[in-house]
Image (cartoon, rainbow, N blue to C red; front, side, top):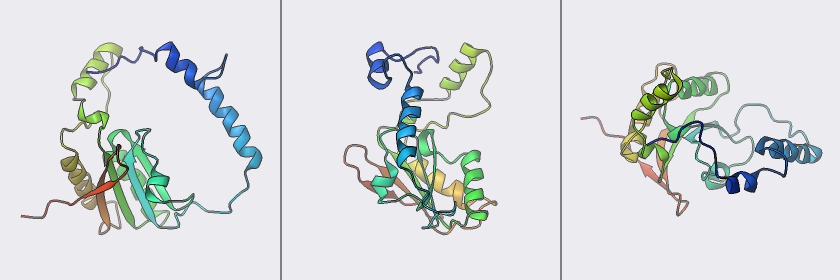
Length: 188
């Protein structure tokens, strides 16, 4: 079940977020002007103070800084659909660790994730619609805990990462705001 790329939001949803006569991007640019007017350089560098990288889903319901008690400069935040550890996540984590000093990795999936209802059929439908097959996998899953375990394993076994001893995974409950830890599968 997918939404065609050409389908747009209902008019009421569009008008709720866009200024009159403008686009959502126009609204964001205007908000940035207000932000920049009061902005002062905090004098930080790109190295996270807490030496942690957080990998999470891009879902708009996850306010990671508030949920984890983080401030600007505390962590690297890496997000994608599902919070799945893909090659690009490994790329970002490798740069985070090797060039910018992070040592810990926190993985966060969440309840009600859209990837729970997608399948690889999404890729096939997209290819049929646009005439080109995506070179990426959907990485959909049916079991949140199992996918967190898989993500932990992908991080822990990556030859590119220096620090794989402090990798922990969680499921964020979007209705309570609580994290539930998912423990990796013990070796058999």
